Amino acid sequence: MNGLAPCRSSHRAMKPKLKLQHVEDALRQAGGITSAAAKILEAAYGSCTPRTVRNYVKRHPRLAEVIEETVELNLDTAESQLMTLNDFLPLLALRNIEALPRPADDAR
Image (spheres, rainbow, N blue to C red):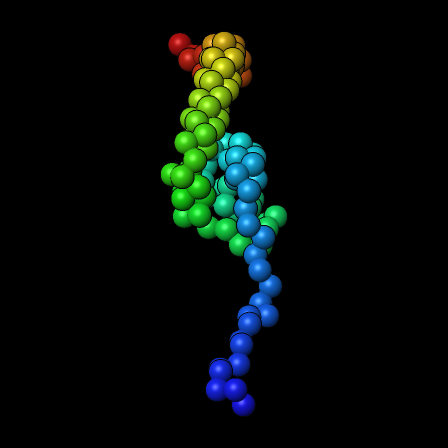
């Protein structure tokens, strides 16, 4: 023996390191929601937590911009759908009122 401790290398498989583009794509797909992005990344790369995604966002200002853009786009889409629905609400209300049973005429 040479007096040195034997080298003990880990034979565990290394997790693939997430690339910035992977996190950005997941955030866009998840609508800017970090927990949903983490689930997307976990499915694709094996292991990812919302904390990991938040850490990437803290380190890379571009990802914060992606979240802001995506959330704004989602809000615009929701607002547009509400406005469209609002255009039809009076018609739906009128249709529902017409469908209500009429009270029977009182025999006087």
